[in-house]
Structure formats: C-alpha cells, structure tokens
Length: 206
Image (cartoon, rainbow, N blue to C red; front, side, top):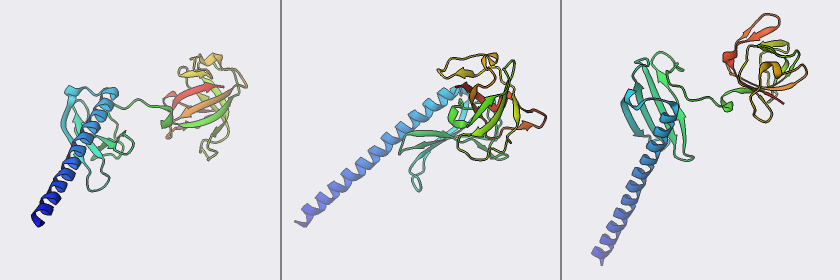
C-alpha cells in the first residue's frame, strides 16, 4: 500500500513539475516574441544586434528581460527590454556605465503619453510659429513655465479637433489649443518667451 501511495505521489510531482516547466517555456517564448516585435517596430536591424541575452527574473518579479548591444551605437550602451508577464507589456530601458538615461540610435516612437498636456490660447494669428498664452497643465499642477506669452516654433504636427493636419497660419487669435510638451522643455527667456519645436510633440486646435 505504501509503495502504491509513493508511486502516486511521485506521479503527481512529475505532473506538477512538467506543467510548471511547460508553462515556463511557453511564457518565455511569448515574452521573446513580444520583445522581438517591439524591437522590430523600434527599427533596430537584426544584423546590428550582438551580445544578446534573454533572462528570467525568477527570484523577484517573475518577468523576463532581454539585453543586447547594437553596432553603430555607443559600445557602453545596453538596450534592455522588460516583459511584464501580468499584462504582456514591454518596457524599453536603455542604460550605460556613463549615463542613467543614455541617448540611443534607435529610440521607440513617441506617443502622446510620453508628453505633458497643456491647455493654451492663441493670442495672435499663427504664421511660421504659434503665439500662445495661458499655458496650464491639464492636471492643474504647477508647470514651472510661468503664465506669460510664448512663441512656439512649430510649423508641423498641428491638427484640428478631428485629427486633420493643418498649417500654423490656420490657427487664429482666440483659438483654444491642446499642446503636448516634453517634460524637460527648455524655455528661452525672451519676451515673449520661446519654446523650440524639438520640445513640442503635437498641437491640437479645439
């Protein structure tokens, strides 16, 4: 009888271990597919990738991490991708020995979520730039930009409320605007103050 229960217990252990191993390899393959799709969309050429490793953070998060270097980029820059098993998302977190936030040759395409959203109002008709005042974060937090007038050096990436791209001179005095600015926006302290186009992701005329 004891031998029978021992064999049953052993069989159960084998089944459980087999299930866990199978689940691990299935999840690992899923993680690698999702990361590779992200890398492909990011535009990193497969032939440029070297020192590639995929590891499982089994001791802490249970998530998967892929790291590699890219030919043509700085030799100390490591491209790191975190795959979160819980929701299937991929996060790109490059790092290097010389910088916490290194510039990389292949950056993921930016989206609205990567920028701070401001309300504003045109105080003059647009031309090659936009003229905006009353800039306020929609969250109500202090933006640190001040409440004066700004010249936004932006002639593209301007849309109407329906998503149709328009020209800067289509923006008229009094128009309400939604403006997506980089978190590290630098303001040139002239009068009016000036914001370079590289800090402006998109402008929407309401």
